Amino acid sequence: QVQLVESGGGLVQAGGSLRLSCAASGSIFNIARINTMGWYRQAPGHQRELVAGITNDGRTNYADSVKGRFTISRDNVKTVYLQMNSLKPEDTAVYYCNVRAKGDDYWGQGTQVTVSS
Image 1 (spheres, one colour):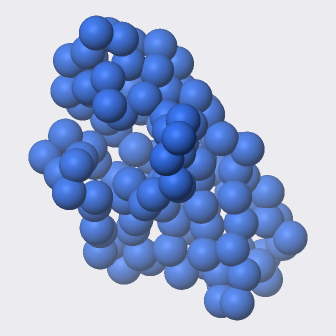
Image 2 (image 1 turned 180 degrees about the vertical axis):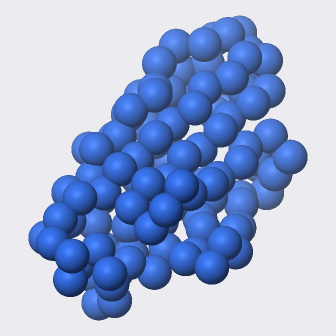
């Protein structure tokens, strides 16, 4: 099994910044199977959507709504970050860390991000 621990959510004014962190832990075998790590979000009344993802070799992808404002990065195969700048009220959502290992997906508990006008 893989366990995910998230941190960094909170309340911020429009135009501000937050940095989300997610650390994965578990057996060496399962950690070695991780291919990608990423962040999803779900706002009230909306479906969960992909915000950003990063592969083991550093390739990234972003939702159109966050391009130029958010940056995803990894320290290693077990830790992923999401730097969120120029935050807008429409970014308000619960943000979830996701880990994709061969044949399995793992999710964090979610962290609330609230952006006020």
